[in-house]
Image (cartoon, rainbow, N blue to C red; front, top):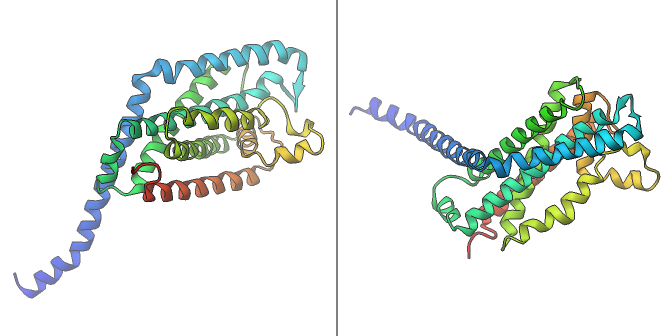
Length: 276
């Protein structure tokens, strides 16, 4: 090999290695995501059917029975008003429960050690698990929205706002569930946060009412609830009405995505709760 050929090979070597690493990371990411999606579809009677039945009961009890006595809210029937909140609630709960059970299961089965020993970077592992949880949330959201159409009519006012809000909200609680699963040492630990934190925040997040109906200081306290911004942003995307500024809601959601994502990556890099 002459000098010019050797120099050309040396110059292209970093680019070749970078492309190879990128392809390897893409394969690893697709593999983790595909495994998570197959897990959801394989046990669909546990992952997709129960949320649909639960939300149907909400529509019947709150939308039909109680809604007929409540009347209209902000120009919409009560059934129409609560549909965005119930859809977002189902997405949040399923994203959270999916990733906590899946990742903690990998810890319990000790095959998470194979991920740690592999050359794939931490962000690939995190993104794969989060993508699987988000896809389950989207599937559940579509199912619940389809059920809602049997009870009322809806016209999507701002499709782009609705889609981006769902993705951001699902990502936030997928990341939160991942963090919970990393700290959890037994299966009981993954039920503490949904029971004592997630459920109260959800029911106080404006799913069934307008926050403007609350007096001082409860309205101001409610504004500290991140779920309030997700529910109202999605309600704005579906109905075109909201209790808070949509731009403020986006700022809050993006801040949580970046903050939780950075924290989850740091925990994964340090191996918190993984190495014993």
